[in-house]
Length: 112
Length: 116
Image (spheres, each protein chain N blue to C red):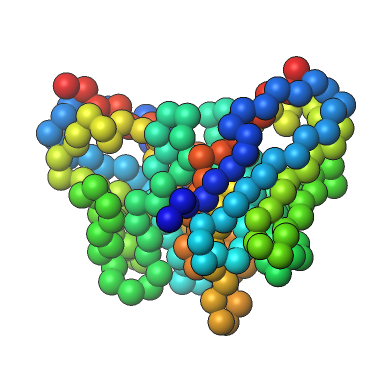
């Protein structure tokens, strides 16, 4: 069965410093992986997705993620945090039936 | 493009009542999936509809049922509401590809259901 583990429930950074949100996945085949962001009282917005093409995936708002099969990881990064990045981030894996399986989320706080 | 829309935005019900939530998919999408997001948790898959049929279902009781209409819009019905059904209900739409797999899912803003 497919699953994802988000290694940090909370991450705090200062504005202008790098962001790293960690995600490990488990899958018996080559997975489709996603990062979604959820701002308070809002729905989910797709940041980026990996579907077995390039291992470094660029998303919206300056975010990117690198698929590392040897480490079963799909960490999300951004070189410089902005106040508007404060939100809940979900790492997601898709199973063979295209059902999305979500991690427990990482709350990102950005301090001025 | 209006994106995925859901109605109502908020809903308050009492235990034992029934509720219907509605979803209109993004233009060009033919597949609708429903997810339940309890407070402080990640969304959990309820079921997915394609061609007006339930294509797959998550681990939810039969009190949860759905429907998809010819225009691809969808309803989620929950009977005999329990306090534990209080959650944000999210609808996601996608396009089913020729091989049967679904493309990227795009989410609506959700319906916040409170059961008292």
